[in-house]
Image (cartoon, rainbow, N blue to C red; front, side):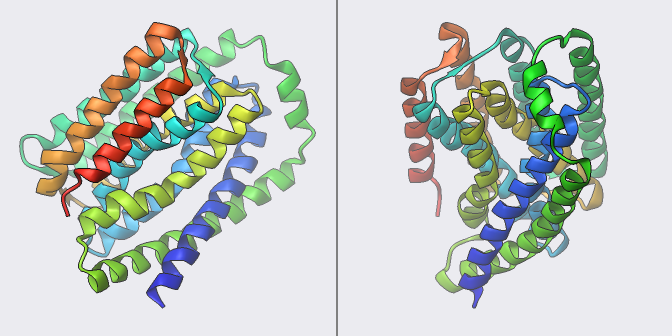
Length: 310
């Protein structure tokens, strides 16, 4: 039965995330935001919602390894798996704002998380509060900047305006309900599977659950890249990593103090830091993430899983 809940949770999470993103993007375009900002905010929040619900659920039921492992594993999956697959299928050009603003914010958030836990191996409520304040400040600044500078993308916005606002809101509501049920079933099923086959909560969190909650990012990024909206695709992944650390870990830490496991502190966090740093030369040298870059990222992800401590 636990395997049924695990699979059902993953399916419902994917469907819920898809509905939420569709509705949120349609609503966001009505406010004349650029695709990059939509990808960095609405889409990334929508596709990160599964991680938020899974981490909160895991923390509240006393499984901090799943809560933290889910976020760290999801961020690694976003950069080394989702971005890799998307780039191998659709090479993505990178705009200057991504290099000057988005990547530094993502890298800074990752470093900030490391600094927050390096002294006591814990994520406290005041760490979480600082994360959330930083994220909200960045979002407000990003939206204001976009509304001032954005004089393009009118054709795309006109297409989105045809979508009924009531229909968009309904998609958001259905998506949130689906995410709620999916998160509960996923965590419950994953914990039981871990007990049955002797795998630790940490490994389950950074592999099965992390990949499962990254599926919305994979789907959204591939669809956006296929439609030539690479700003949404890349913005979604970078924005999701920002939300995962600053919003999800921030909110989870505010709700309940999280103790960081030795595996995360000595292994996973350094893979995430190194991977985030590795993205910089990929986007700077060619102003694009090529298929070769995607293959390199995929090899890194396989290496991460291979050396993962059981």
